[in-house]
Every structure is written in structure tokens, then in C-alpha cells.
Image (cartoon, rainbow, N blue to C red; front, side, top):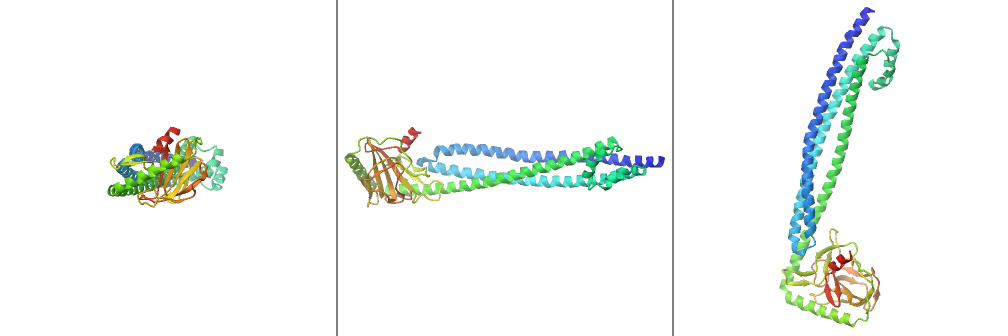
Length: 398
């Protein structure tokens, strides 16, 4: 019995020493790995936060100029800057994903190494149990032989009263270290999934911004073509619009609707709200725009979109101007009380002169007829025959 006790103590010493060394080694690896991850990912996160601030400022600046034709070049340049910011954000997110992937692989290596060390120490523990068996404790060997693995044994080992308390504490600490590694890997996997989602969102945002730049290019081209054409044909254009203006006033003067139908004006092109040319002076103060032009915005096209009556009323004009410098297909609706709306450059008209229409009723479709350089709706609100700023009117409503 004395020899068996000596063997047990000899086995216990290297086992306890191996456990202690292993715990210290794993702790050093674990905390070192965490520090490396914090340093690299934190730096990338700081850069991403700086880019977010830059993007927010650009968004604020863009909002100020996007609907002002006189600032379309500035708007276009800002959109380009925003695309560049989005590209830098995508690059940083890619770097962040790569960093976490590398750290994940390192942590998985540490986990595998720790499992090997636990297995090695478990083998030592088996030798200790065998030594205890020599002393006659048969139940411990049965417990060991019926265990599927180390973790199964640990559950059953709660019933083992003869295991030294010191050794049990070391084993518990090893299991805690392995649990910590498992939690680290789960956390990194979650972070990686979040980053992949963020990267996809950033890629989508970049694609949307590139579309916006394309839209701005189209808008600039359209504006430049319109301005160049207007300068070349200014006299003819002015004559035609003055003639149309006079005709509109005559038609409204002849209308028998004395009282306003009531209510607020609705938007004439549901689903399309982008103003490509506002009311007022344009082309270096050489042309006075009597309404607003409503374009496609970020949608593929506005051509053929439904145009509806902004309010109830009576159609006093529904015709095609044959003059190439005019409104093309247009509809004029009298709402009574000196208020009227005009819808121009239509591809087709759905109402006739003298017809009574309801608010929201289809009166035509968006087109590109008359003096137009791209599909859009030219929309006017007139008070006592004089064109007023439609957007100011809508802003007053809101």
C-alpha cells in the first residue's frame, strides 16, 4: 500500500504541474489574441466612423443643392465625392473582414491546441485514476470506462469524492478556459456575419450613388442641351410662349367657373417628385420658366407615367401645339376662383375640352412633345391667369 501511495503522489505532481503551466500558457495566448484583435479592428472602426461623419456632411450639402438647376454642376460634383467616400468605406470594411478572418483562424488554432493539451492532461488524469484503482476504488475505473469523453466524465465526476480538491479546481479552470475560447470564436463569427452584411449594404449604397451620378450626368446634359437650344432659338421660343400665355389667359377669362372648387392641390404625377427645373429665371436670367419640370428621379423612366388632375375642375384646353417651340400636347384645367393648372409635353391626352374632371383623375401621360429635351411633365399653377411658383404653393400647404 505504501508503494501504491508513492506512485499516486508521483503521478499527481507532474499532472498538477502540467495543469498549472497549461493554464498560464492558455491565458497568455487568449489575452494576447484579444489585444491584437482590439487594436487592429478598433483602428479600422475609427476610420469608418470618420467616413460616416464625412458622408453625413455631404448628404446635408447635397440636400441643399439637388433641386436647384443653377447648382447642378455642384450637385454632380458632390455626388462624385459621395461615391468616393462610399468606395473608401467598402475598402475599409473589406480590410476589417479580412482582419477578423485572420484573428478567427488564430483563435481556432489556439482552441485546437488547447483541446490537445486538455486531452494530454486527461491521459495523465486516467493514470491517476488507475493508481486509485490499485488502492481498491473500483467505482472510479467504472466511471472512467463508461464516459464517452472528457466532458461526459466531468459531469459524472461530481460523484467522485476521492479526487483531490486542488486537482479538481485546476480541471475546472481548464474547462473555463476552453469555454472562454468557444465564446471568443462565437463572438468573432457573429462580428464577421455583421460585417459581411454591412459590406453588402455599402456595396448597394455605392451602386445607388453611381446611379445618382448617372442621373446627374443626364440632367446636366439635358440642361445644357436645353440652354444651348434656347440661346439659338430664343426669339422663336419667346414668341411661341408669349402667344401661348396670351391664349391661356383668354381661355380662362372665358371660363364660367366663378367659385373655387375647394380643397388642396394634389401632386400631378404620383410616385415622381424630382424637380429637374424649378420655377423662375434660368439660363443666366435669360428665360423665365413659368412652372416646374418633374423628372424621373432615380427611376428608370418617367415616360408614359400617369398624369392626374391636381384638383377637380373643368377642362378648358386639351390640344397639341404644332409649333415645335411650344408645349406640345397640353391640358389646361380651370378650378374656379381664378385658379387653374396646366400640364404640358404629354405623350397623350385623356380628356376633352368642356369635360368635368375629379381630383386624381387621369388626364394624360408624361411625354416629350413640343419644346422638350427629355421625358418630363411641365406643371403650372396659375392665379388669375398669371403663373405662380407651384412649389411655394405646396410648401405653404405642408
